[in-house]
Length: 160
Image 1 (tube, one colour):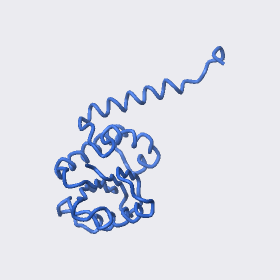
Image 2 (cartoon, helix red, strand yellow):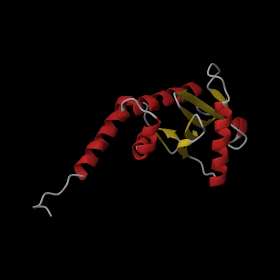
Image 3 (cartoon, one colour):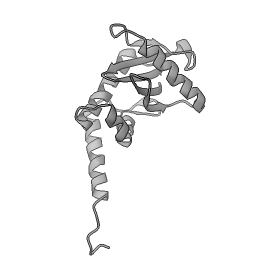
Image 4 (tube, rainbow, N blue to C red):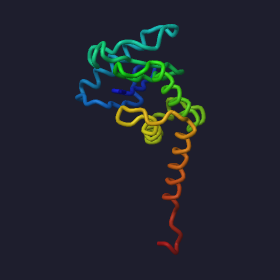
């Protein structure tokens, strides 16, 4: 099961944080700092899996991450999850973001947080993987966009 999804930039600034297990806010902040410290000090040519830090469960949990440009995508999972499966899930999530935002960057995560959360909820909900088919996810995002546009139409003078 996925316990947390963390996205932060090269300086450790969180851009998306989603915990699927309850932690007090101060513990969440410590987890974010510790996770960034563990992940950011690793070379680019080493394995993308490591044991969870002491705060998030130690050896029972794994941190699986990918570093794209200025962002780290980190999934904290328990021992029942496949490392390669989660790496593939990260790839699907990033490619979906890329398709929805046309070359996604850190600013897209900042200024379109609601859309990013919607995409994440199409992929993972409650710590369980829901969908891995990128075309299906993009289709749901496009449907949501059409629904939002139809709700925002301005009223004509007759409708007022």
